[in-house]
Image (cartoon, rainbow, N blue to C red; front, side, top):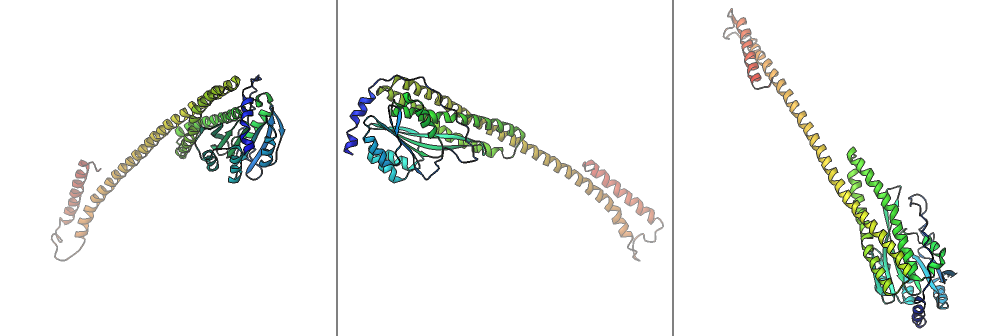
Length: 385
């Protein structure tokens, strides 16, 4: 550790040099992530050190196989820079890095636990940055979030990745193809990582915009599952907002820090460009949340209208059914009256009034007619017929 602590003087001397910065090369466009097939961002082997390399004047001079070898070779390179990439590392690996590079215990604890909010912390000469990367998965039509922790010192960069995004191998390849940019030191690597994370938001924004357009169509079609899709996408936008909104303030703070520590002016311009992109993305995400809220309100209104229409149809059907029941009941009562009279006079008992009356039959017929006519008039007045 004594040898490690003796190196800051040489790092300070290096950071004071002025270097000419070449024109920026735009990063290669990454194809949209897909759920099918192995993801190139996922380490092929077990979790731990994905890649470790030493650079001098922007050129890779060594690719150590272990952390111990990286430490040894970095001590032998007074003007070198180590870039160590890890994916879901073990606690022993992080503790080894913390001891070698004097990392703050709180930052190491955050890197172990993951599930941190985006933030920027400075511990002495070391910057600790937490980023939330995102990628859009075409097959399930959802946003997948990853978490990236970056330790930036005067002669080292350590990246700790939790999740598939972002693909830092592409960032490393881009930087190695631009040695004039890479030789600016760890700050240039941090810029490239931030730029890659922010560029990764672009296909996510496009994918979400397409989803919202599809949802609007489904809402007016009355699709039954659209409410669930709106809710799930709203939750993803809340997560996306948590990833992008803090990044705006972080970048402005980092730009101020770059100016304070006299980082290369052109690198500051690059960082301001990244800040502009983040601001634009954050505004788009805010717009998505507002649009989804409005779509959910419209969907609820349409569902309510549909339910009211169904209830009205049921009420009308019930009313019509009641009218039919009234008619059937009325005719049943009208037909029952003559049946009752005929039944009584059909008993054929010996001692019955009018049984041997000559006018009994006409009287019975007239009585049936009077009863039926009376019932018909009564039901008609009550609008049962």
